[in-house]
Length: 146
Image 1 (cartoon, helix red, strand yellow):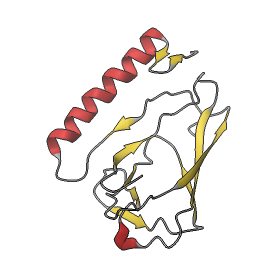
Image 2 (cartoon, rainbow, N blue to C red):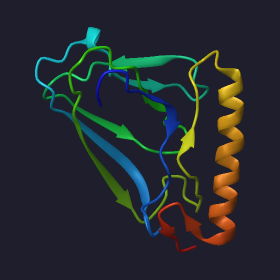
Image 3 (cartoon, helix red, strand yellow):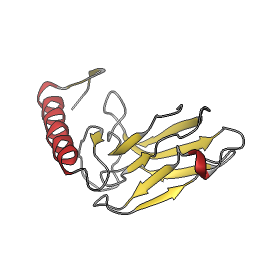
Image 4 (cartoon, rainbow, N blue to C red):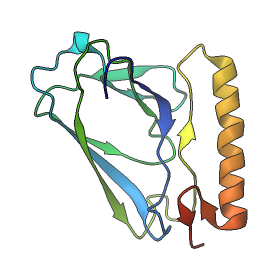
């Protein structure tokens, strides 16, 4: 990520590309030397209603282990400096869901608190993409198996 880049609050899609395994963990390893909080580009982990964030600095050599499920909202606040914020991300999968039953959701766009219109628009967009994915068996990147 570079100056001005950010990621709005969102949850990641529930599965790998062929929809055979559930996405369970995301390991984020930060590799930008001398990165400080004032640079922005920091990870924000949100409560289920996306009202209260917990911010963690994208500090060099920091490893964050994050659950990925239907309520693990996260974002990256805006990078404020003319430097690259670099992160190595690895997903880990399992054949069974943590819920004990099958489910599916696409990456769900959201918005920061107070962005009511964008939040509503994101909900409609996510519902439409999930419906299309289930009905057609396809995602933006290819065919999925149900």
